[in-house]
Length: 385
Ligand SMILES: [Mn+2]
Image (cartoon, rainbow, N blue to C red):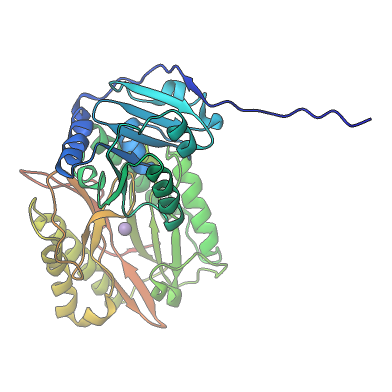
C-alpha cells in the first residue's frame, strides 16, 4: 500500500495589522518618495533594501519588501514574520500587508502592477539575479522596469528628531562601554577578550547588537586599519585601537578609541593629540551645504602637515543612520558629496605606521543649522591604562 503523504500548502494571505503611531516628523517620507516617483515618471516603485523598508515602515525583520503606487502601499513578508508585522508597522495610509513566499509571482497573480506603466527599482541595491527576475516578471504585464539611483537614500540623510534621539542613545551606550573597557584592559588578555567584552557590555547597556564587526588591534597589528581581533596578547607598551558601535531602534553609533597600555612615549602622545585635534576641528567646521571633500581636507591637511600624509589613506568619515556607512561620504576621492542639514557624521582620522602601531580617533557629530553638536567625546589626550 502506498504511504499516505500530506502535502503542505501555504496559501498567500493578507493579514490585518495593528499600527504603530506614525511619527509626526516623518510624515513627509512617502510624500517625498511619491514626489520622486513623479519626477522620474514612475507609476510605482519596488523597495527591497531592508534599511529603506525600515525607514519607510518601521519593519525590522530580515525579509520584506514594499510596492508603493501613487495611492497604495503594499508590504510583503513571509509567514515567519506574520506575527511580528501585526504590531510593528507604522500607521500608513492605504497599507495592505501580504504574507507570501514568492513576492513577484504573488504581485503578478494579484494583478498589483497590471495598471502600472513604469516600475522603479533600487539601482544600487538589487543583485543582478534579482534584477533579471523582477524585470522578467514585470515584462509579462507589458509594464516597464526602470532602475533609479538613490530612490530612497536621497531622503534618509537628514535625520528627524526621533532618529537623532535613537542615534544619541546608541552613542551614549558606546561611550559607557569605552569607560568600562578602560578598567578591563590589562597586559595578558587578548584582543579577542576585549572585543567580546565590548560586544557583551554594549548589549548590557541596551544595544540591539553591534553596528558592525568590532575591531580591536594592538601593537603592530594596529597598522591593519580594519584588523579583526586576534588571539594576540596585550603587552605593556602596546597601543590598542578599538572601533565599535551599537544600535538603538536600528540606528548606529560608530566610535574609534585609541589607548596606551602602560606609559606612553612623547611621540605616541603627540600623534594622538594631532588626530584628536584634526577630528575635533573637522567636527567644528562641518556645515550644511559644504562639500564632503572640503571637510576631509580640514583634517587631512593637519595630518599631512605633521608629516603623516602617507599614513592616512582612508576617508575622513561618513554619514551614520540605519546604515553604518551611509552617504554623505566625507572623502578626498569624491567631489559630489554634499553635507545636508541635520545629518550625523562619523569623523575618523587615523595614522598607521607599518610594523609599529595604528591610531584612530572617531567621534559622531550632528551637523545642525546653528551649531554642530558632538554626540560622542573622545578623550583629548592619549589615555594610559
Ligand atoms: Mn566609522
